[in-house]
Image 1 (cartoon, rainbow, N blue to C red):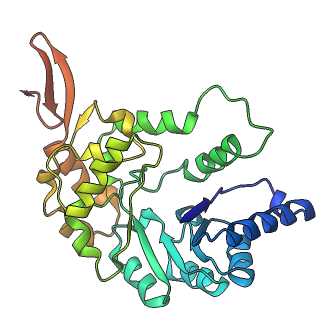
Image 2 (image 1 turned 90 degrees about the vertical axis):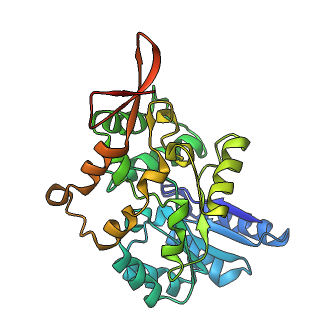
Length: 280
């Protein structure tokens, strides 16, 4: 059993005497009941767990490990496993450098589907930490970051393709990095989770790629991305230098494969981004 304790911000409470004692007490209780591992984002917790407890220490994706230097740092603190920042999922030179730099286990998050190089990422997860953590909780009207993220994709659908998800069929390209893949979606319904697990376990999915992507579930009924039409795209991404304004590959691919659900006089249809013609 693995416990997740990966808030990106605790308001500094973990550094107060009372907060430190509370966390230490909690770790001791978890260790006593036989928890196998704990996922944390704070380097302090990595070091505490590695030094004083028998549980494995998993460095969260919210530690944003995207370089061999960061990976080495966390391994030296005592990390058993590191979940790599998805931002580098398609940067194989960095993934290979991280793999060469550390001996601890690595995990890749395959279906989070956040914006590539998202400008809201740090602020959004800090908001989550305070909204879902101990009080006083912020009294907010809505989640600005989430709705801004959705609107950016609606206005610029190529962002769906640029997002660093990994298709089930492409897991084999990562075997030299790791054989452990993390599927996001613990807030989804059970049927959704089972569908995603089945797709990645079988390394194959026929249907709308949007069905498997976690963070943009509210766009699933707006866009249709036929997964099979993305075969071979990984070869471009493996050699891509990520200078998007000069490359344009993801924009062209989006125009070729993405369909948008629409309504006409005959009912619901799908319209290709690259064409004015409708596809039922």
